[in-house]
Amino acid sequence: MTGPDKLLHWLDAERESQLDFLQQFARIDTANPPGDTRRAADFFRAFLDREGIAHRTEAPQAAHPNLIATFAGAAGPGLGKSRHLVLNGHLDVFPVGDRAAWARDPWSGEIADGRVHGRGTVDMKCGTTALLFVFAYLHRLHAELPGRITLTVVSDEETGGKWGTAWLIENCAQEVLGDCVLNTEPSGLATVRFGEKCMLWLRFHISVKGGHSAYPHTGGSANKVAAALIHDLQAIEAMVPDEPATVRATLDRPEVRKAADLSLGAGAAQVMRRVSVNIGMIQGGVKINMLPAECVLEVDFRLPVGISRAAVLARVTAIVARQPGVSFEELLPGGPEATVSDPTHEMMGHLLRHAGAALAEPPQPIVSLGGTDTRFWRVKGVPAFVYGCSPAGMGAVDESVSIAEFHHVLRVHALAAWDYLTAGR
Image 1 (cartoon, rainbow, N blue to C red):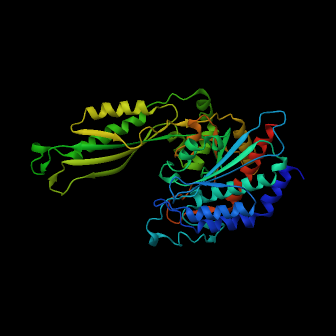
Image 2 (cartoon, one colour; image 1 turned 120 degrees about the vertical axis):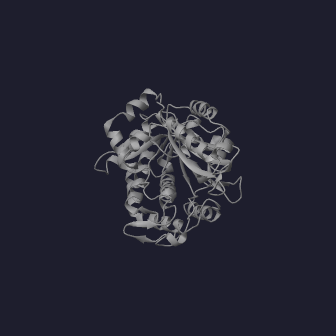
Image 3 (cartoon, rainbow, N blue to C red; image 1 turned 90 degrees about the horizontal axis):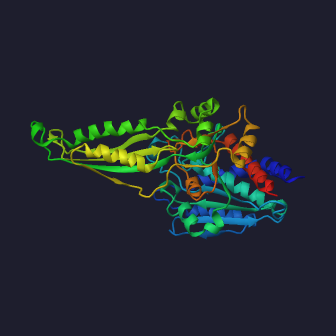
């Protein structure tokens, strides 16, 4: 059998093993915070050991280990440049919240109605499991495979990646940068993500004299200032991005807009290309009949490709200057801009082709609304692409993932990875 034939055989013959691993992984509490992923890391290490795959652990924070496994194909580079493909997934997941609100134990991993149930099954235990099996299958074919492939299984993604992917790229760059990255964060089967908006988080402090509510003329209200500030901040959503030509041409296509709305909800195609402003938290006031002297706002701006952090900060500074007693600070200083890879990159073609072969309509390339660890590679100039299961229900009560989608994503990444590495011969 050829390499792809062997891959297809294992993908089909070992479906029960793949599902069993996902189910057991779903039973391990990796909620972040606190983000203790040691049991999950041990579970992954045991799998790699059974497959005879060398690996090591990098743990700048003891409770948040990161796993690196890498191997070079024995077939050599052939006539072309040897390629290095990186697979990236994370162990940590969102907190459970109120357990009483769940119909099932959030760590049950129960299988029902064609789905695996539990916190993090969507984001992203299904995807990380898929990449683990992709890596193992390609390792079995190392004698036929040119180039190099690296698996990074990280902690700390849900709280920014400082001790996870960001740390690995800064401290183990030679091993983990590579030439291209595949990631299986939930994207929806109808879309492949080649970029993502960036996060700009600001905290606003409002301080006025305050006083008795029967005497509003004497002290002013910090909450009223906050209301006016919110109104002005919302206007930032009207900023027009200066998109690169290839990005604009891709996102202008009607089928791309349709796929974005299908995967992410009606209106997603529009939100993808503009600033979004979320007033995430408001704290102000002591008592109903007192003028609030203090108010704090925390605001999440998501910036599209073509609008810089500096441009938004300039608009915010001008708005704040018009309001009395307002100052602000950046909560994630020095963060990256919106990141993007070439939507016409070869890897995009492999993903679209293999995904489309199993779907009624081929998926379309889009920019992600939320953040993933792929941004750390794009900042370093490494193309990175995301294809995963439906994001519906991620982070919500009764989170669950489709088993059929899980197997589909595993298959697409295995075949795309093989095509990318062998095309470099």
